[in-house]
Amino acid sequence: MKKALLGLAFLATLYGCSKKNDDNTTPELHPDKYVVTRVTGENDSLVLVYNEAGLVSKFSQWEGAMADSFEVSYSDKGLSEFKYFALTGKRTDRRFVYDDKGLIAVNYYNMDNNGQLIITDKDSLVYKDGKLSEYHEISGGMRNVVYKLTWLGVNVDKVEYFLVNSGTEIPVSVTTYAYGDKAGYQHAFPADFMLRYEKHNFSHLSGKTLVKEEQKAAGSGVLIFTANYTTTYNDNGYPKEIKVDIDDKQNNETSTSVLKLEYALLQ
Image (cartoon, rainbow, N blue to C red; front, side, top):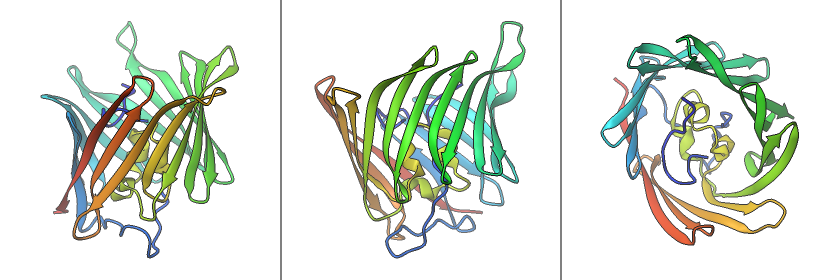
């Protein structure tokens, strides 16, 4: 089950924990005080349950009246496994593999034709100067997609997307990002939660809040879409809403959606 966190167009596009404690960032949510209990989109929502340590222990992704539910486990490195509550019982959905540099692979599990749980897909991560530089997706033993990241300070500045055919990387698109001064809403979640699930939103790697995203076709430079993000904060200075205004040039249409974050005191 290789899916994104929320089904908002262009928003479901891995983030290393880079919380900053300077005057320009949003205060961190201390797990012993406040936690995010729900993230609501236009037609879907994410509901989270926490353990006594303030870490996400379960979460459910709702789409209308239907939900996919997961159990989360941890190792001394961080998030270690998502287990999916299937009709036949609880089973492994994905496992996170680490070395001394950090997360290096994500293994995805599905049932084969014989009813055996096997690894069907894998993501491989490459780092340069301590930051994620390449994100490779492997399916059926074949590498078929790669994202290449360019950094500017603490933020991901550019992501180049390639399809891979028989080892040849074919450039498809280039996405660039612009940021504000405060920390992004991903910092409201403990233990890199947003990073490990909403893997294609590479702005989650960044230290600051995303304000604009622009994607162009590789080579021709034809504009595919622009997205503007406006974040509002509650009285405690924590992200409350993220408004997303999208101008989809390919389909000649515009849209607006809103993410809403709800908080609660950790009991």
